[in-house]
Length: 301
Image (tube, rainbow, N blue to C red; front, side, top):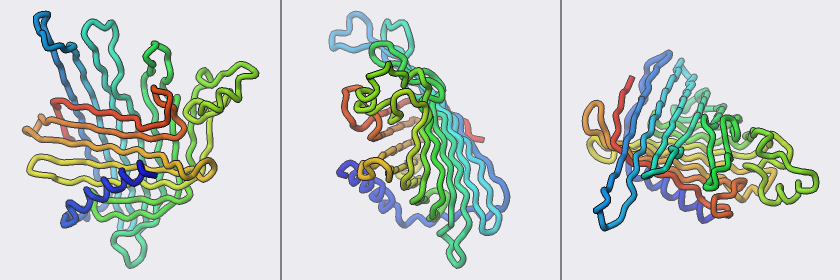
């Protein structure tokens, strides 16, 4: 609960910082499309005479965000497709290590509540997985394409102040977790031990999927901190009614873009995930943290 309170306080604080923002949505009817392709690069190098210590490394990230949205009188339909991939290579390591790998699609349909300009009856769908295999410190493969994969769908209520500020609450959300059987195959007699350890992303021994039913909250807030510096905040919360509903899953992402010119920017990406079904690398249930900083090439279309 303390973790959830901290994340919520941070998000609410950011909203309060820019409460005076009165940017209006576009009234354009029909389809609007926009996207951004981004390349991030960071590198460090030390020669043999560098006495202060250090490890040479090179890293790169590619990402594509594509939005295609529809407006027709009291109907809105927002869609976002995200694909991102990043690798790093440290000193004399033979192989590159994956630092980012996301494939995600979100669709949100809303019908305006009569007499309200900001409230909508809504239905949403979210699907996410990764594209490449992931390995642990021992070189063992622990994930690959569609394992795991998450699908959420449910009705709810959407509060949308503008394209830069919205919150969707869905109290009856179904969530499916799909995995490959190679990660859950357990010899007879060891099923209980596997399940007691949390299974594989919550999926039990010799199964390939898990069904959950609960409540979700999805919030989005983008603000301009100063000239040419914008911060995008994405918060996703989920509580499973069927198993420990008090243990809320948290996924918070912050993207900070500092524009240099039309095609270049410095970018910071920060993500914190807490999933009660996932055992982290240190054998506990804690926050997974990802941070990426680099000089970026941007192309907006």
